[in-house]
Image (cartoon, rainbow, N blue to C red; front, top):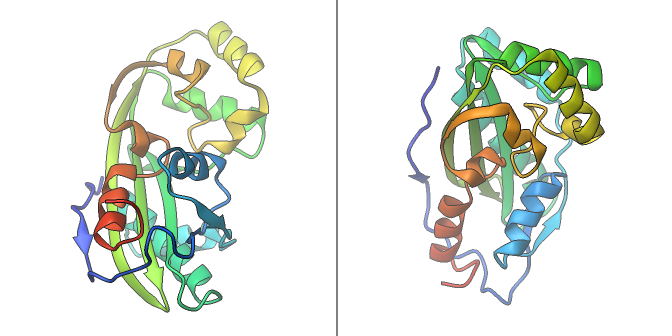
Length: 217
């Protein structure tokens, strides 16, 4: 598996004063929007709506690792939205779940969610969350982080009960779980940053935004 890369500063721009125009988040994720709002960084939501499946297939066909896939998608989303918002700084994000050689996508239905969790049961998997900031066709900054999670060897009965309680909300997560709720009961060990697991390396992003003048220092 491709390890997470260190913080990469491609430029040191001045984006905006804290009282200036909002940042743009190229994602429909309510979790990412909430994370930013909770720490006082309001954003305008403008999902990129790129064909993630096609991009993943192309990258994997060229031998890209999970970290490469996550970063390429984060950059693509940021650049796609930046192309229609001249002058605006745009945050693009992506998260990839890798277990062995397999990459997981968000389950399309509850049967697929059950199959996901059966495939992950009793195993360690890795969540890689990537974030990039773009403006006017240029990637200003990028960063990714990885977390390692080990699911316990739960019973089929527990799995069915979990899915009944969690409901369709699990379809919004690449791993069919949310650690903030009953999904925590799926795990025996977690190593990694909480924000990274939620899909956004928040502390690194805040550090960049402070340096760029886009949030309170």
